[in-house]
Image (cartoon, helix red, strand yellow):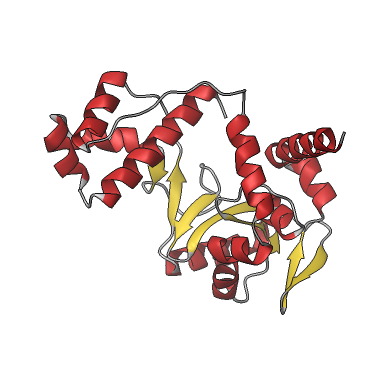
Amino acid sequence: MPESSRIATEIAALLRRERSVQRLTQQQLADRAGTSQSAVARVERGGRVPSLDLVERLFAALRRQLAVTAQPLDSHLDAKMDALAARSLADRIDELGLDRLLDRLGELPHLLTGSTAALLQGAPVPVDAVEIAVRWRDSARFTAWLEAAYGQRWNARWREFGGLYLEPEEPGEHYWMTRYGGIRAQLCDEFPEAIEVRHGDRRYRVVPLVMVELTDPQTAALLHRHRQRSAADRT
C-alpha cells in the first residue's frame, strides 16, 4: 500500500473510532468543526490524505490531537504480525466470524483461499475479510446468496460499499460487505488443488499455503518479511 494511502487509512480509522466513542454523527462532528458532513465522510473513507488543517479541526472538535512519530519503514506491519502471531488461532477465527459466514454459505460450492487459507495454516497475516474461490458456473448462485445476505459491493472509486451491481460479472473489485461480514471472492473456471485442515471440531478445505504464496503477492510479501525477521531473531 502506498504511504499516502496507509496514512489516509489510519487517519480515517482513528477518526471513525473517536467519533463512535463519543457517539456523534458525522453531521454533529461537522457542526462542531465548522465544516460539512460530506467533508467528514471523505476523511472517514480514507483513500487520499486530507488537509492537515481539516484533520486538526476535526480532532480538536473531539478534544483530541494527533501525535506524529517517525518509525522504520513498514514497522507497523512488523508490529501487527507480531501481535497476530501471539494470538491463538481460535481467537482469530472467532474474530473474523469465519464459521458463522461459512455456515451461511450453505450449499454454495467454495474453497477458502488467500489470506484466510494462510491464516488457517498458521500464517500471522492480517485478514480483513473471508476469502473464497467460487467457480464461474456458480456465479448466479453466489449473486443470489449476496442478495439474500444484503450484500453491498466495494466501490473503489468512492472508497465505500454500495452503488455497484452485485454480480461478479459486472466490473468492480470482487469484495462485498454482507450481514455476516466481509467476503472476497476469486472467480475461477475450476477449483485449484485443495487440502483439508482441522481446527477444533471443524474441517476446512483450503488452498495449500505454497499455492497461496504463488498466487497472492501481498500475502507472499508479508510471509517473506515475517520469515526474514524470524531468522534474524534466531541469529
